[in-house]
Length: 130
Image (cartoon, rainbow, N blue to C red; front, top):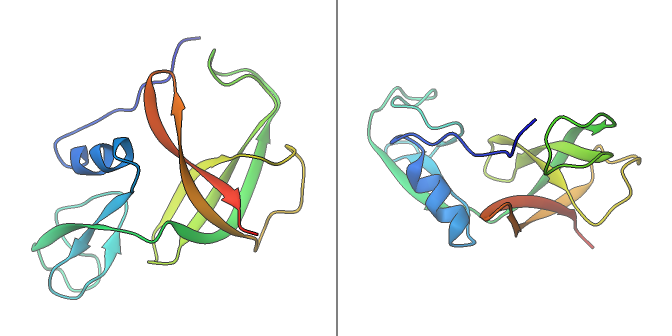
């Protein structure tokens, strides 16, 4: 088991840079405004190839969650939880839920993104909104 390192490509490098800067930006269509994640060359709504990177509000709603009780990576000791969050802009991202006990009833809860240092890199994490 090893350390986790994000797999970066030219198509998602601006997203990883925005996370390092503490303000997540996602690819958006210049024609219709639809945000998309993961990045893709063609808008799934209008099929435009015109894109731009736009910062997001960093808020959303938990759709699903899971608690990992087994150690898969050295730098994530169990138990830890992961949540699927529908961002207010539309896309769904996976992230860790911080500041809460591993077990809970999280579906439908509002969250805000924060940025935490992890293994020498910055990453986003969700925290239940007050």
